[in-house]
Length: 244
Image 1 (cartoon, rainbow, N blue to C red):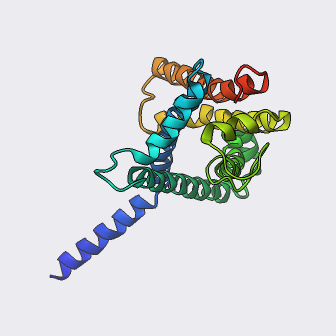
Image 2 (cartoon, rainbow, N blue to C red; image 1 turned 60 degrees about the horizontal axis):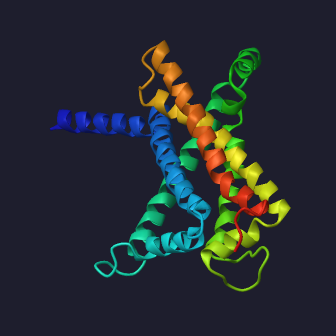
């Protein structure tokens, strides 16, 4: 009986160590990061509906409405969207928590190793070294984005409440809004560039020189796709190609 208890306790201790290990945190970051990238790509294609000639505004509003009525009346109004928002929020929180813990672990692990740390700093990419800071700025931008385009707590170019396409068109008629949004999207793309590569390496996709090149090329493609995909509508609105 005593032997069984000792074995069980040792097993629990090992499992506990595994769950809190650096490798496990990196896997969590990788999985949640790739999920968030997938969401961004879906969101980007939804935004591009504004560029459809003649019916773009209507298509965009119908897309926004569809997200709230998906599977209705089989499910309650906004049920699917609420579940998806919960899942998305959970992914963000897990991603941020893992990133913060790994950052502090990395800092503590190299305390007092100035020369080694300096060499490691110089060897690492700029994107890798600044991931935590770009992540913080991205999170702040997401909060502002929600306050402006979802809750309309912040309004730019109008007062009160307007249709989804009007929030976008009126907002991006302002030059400073396009500039700020462009900087933020640039940060997101920069973050994705390194995050996409690191995620697939962590999950074991890098098995040789060729696979590493493929992952790097895909990282660049996704990075550029996100940047130009999200900037297409704001630029088209600002230069008068899309009007309300």
